[in-house]
Structures are given as structure tokens and as C-alpha cells.
Image (tube, rainbow, N blue to C red; front, side, top):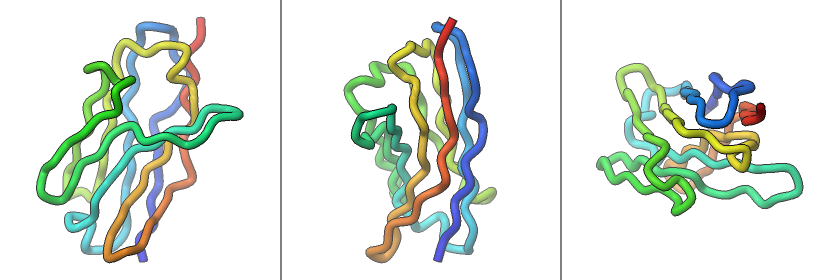
Length: 115
């Protein structure tokens, strides 16, 4: 079992930056395949980025070099540094862990990009 708690969302102007954090419980965080997803109102949840246990990193095409995913296994924490934010980045951002066939989700953190 793993619990995930996201933080760091908020209201930011276009072009601004935010850093999201996701803290996981348990002592096998380092073995989990970790993801950031997002869901805008009326839209399907979509994958933003992945950081595998072996260090494979992948971003969705819409990231366009603006976001950076990282993890600190010693702190059981996953990060998403977001820069050059656009209004279309407005969504609830979720942390996801996949471990031993099980999917775990956080409660989400709201990111709103607006002037």
C-alpha cells in the first residue's frame, strides 16, 4: 500500500513557474514507477511525465521542454518543476505510482494559470 500527497499548486500568471511535490508513504518508493498526470475540467486525465525506477524519463508532447520531473528517493518525493506556464496548463495535477501491479493516486493539486 502506498499513500501519495501532492502539494505546490496554486494560481500563477501566464509565463510563471510552479513546483509540485508528491510525498509517498512506505519503504519501497524507490522501486515505484512514478508519473504526473493532469485533468482539466471536462477533459480526460492525461499523462504529463514519467520517472521510472531505473531513471527513464519521458514527457508528453505538450510539455515542449517547459517541465522537469525529478525524484528524491531518500525523501520519498516526486517533483514537477513547471515553467513558462500557459492558460491551457490549468488542471488538477495528480501524482501516480505503479508498483507490483497496483496503481496508487494522490488527491491532486489544483494549478490555475490566469492573468
